[in-house]
Image 1 (tube, helix red, strand yellow):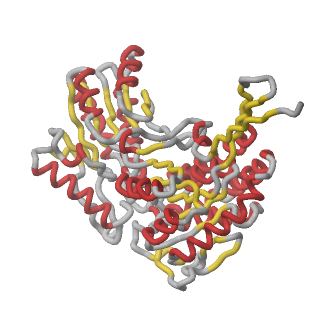
Image 2 (image 1 turned 30 degrees about the horizontal axis):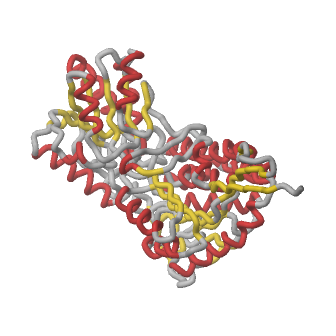
Image 3 (image 1 turned 180 degrees about the horizontal axis):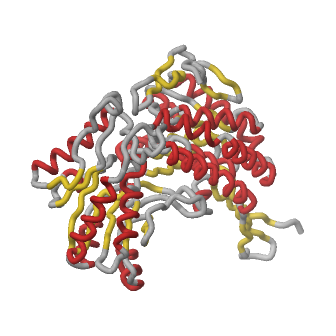
Amino acid sequence: MSAGSFRLYIGGEWRDAAGGQRFEVTNPATGEVVATVPDAGAEDARAAIEAAHGAFAGWSSLPAHVRARYMRKVYDLIVRNVERLARVLTEENGKPLAEARGEVLNGAEYLNWYAEETRRVYGEVIPSSSRRTRIWVLRQPVGVVAAITPWNFPSSMVTRKIAPALAAGCTVVLKPAEQTPLSALLIAEIIQEAGLPPGVVNVVTTRDPAAVGREFLSNQLVRKISFTGSTEVGKYLAQGAAAQMKRVSMELGGHAPFIVFEDADLDAAVQGAVISKFRNAGQTCICANRIYVQESVADAFAERLVEAVRRLRVGNGLEDGTSVGPLIDEAAFIKVEEHVSDARRRGARVLTGGHRMSGPAFDRGFFYAPTLLDQVSDDMRIVREETFGPVAPIMTFRNEDEVIRRANDTNYGLAAYIFTRNLGRTVRVSEALEYGMVAVNDSLLAVPQAPFGGIKESGVGREGGRHGLDDYLEYKYLSVVLDG
């Protein structure tokens, strides 16, 4: 893959940006340029929207099993090309190759699963008020979808948005994150190879998301915006979409509590905490941000967790044995440093980590040591704000009521984790936590058959499951008077 090899994918064709400009994509582990891609503007976004609109009538009218056949072909090609896709993902994002491979395959499963859901977009017949009238309810695709995906899962977030849209009969204009556009463009190559009609899926890369975003908001051909990213940007898009009453799906920030009760299997809880917190170097919206441990087992849990974290190997994601890669860029690195510095200044103690990685293998990238803090108070930034890095604060609690209150004391409501072997406690705490998803004795939540999403300022709508189709479909009520 050589620099300069990528172009925009619009209307089934590869083209340069109208302005002719390009920008570099760099490896966060080495600082090396991986490739360059077109720097699209509003004109390019408009062309992609028009292409999607032009393809909508044909795609939405295809029989469900035909759309499913296309989707399964895309799935098959992704699986066949997993190694290439995973390597490029690691080069642009930094995560370990094993994680990248898992992401690609998990993302492909959304295409496979939603290919089956195309056949289950059912309507209704409702009992009428008179003999001569029939009431029918149809479910029809909303139209052109503008999808905006983040850099932390540059492959699976693409398929999670495209799959339900295609299953519903919508067409898509995708804008991937400027840090990680290559995975989306490779998926576009696969979509073209699979033979999807031109314009059904379009990919626009840009260094200036604001210009493309404004076109998405102002263009009346766009009927829905699906966004995954920060709460701040999500609010901006939701406000802009309201001007035309566009549909929105928003999967936004999180600040997940990870609660370990005294009756938990501590080894399982430690393993779950490591997976949840340090996967993708802590750069996931559902990772454990606040670890609450019941006082009676706090010392034992912390001791085991420190040992497990110290065994993690930090390095270039392309190297064998790496378990934690770099942060995505300097801004992400600075935020992590600020959160740790603030905690230290307010009295937190570093149990392990707490520093930038140094040496020839790390100096050109954004590597931060996996970090655990204790003696943490609720007023620290790391407890109030999303860190998005490999740092976890450990806090203690006395009883259920206390930990539920503290866990819910946030504007976020995406994911929460509980470790307990008590069934009654599982029910009580799960129902009391103000989160869209709760994992009990588990640390992995994203599967194609379940509804992924949050409440409060963590977003609206769901991705995954049959519920994930709802945001791409409109209800149409037909009242029909019969002849005679």
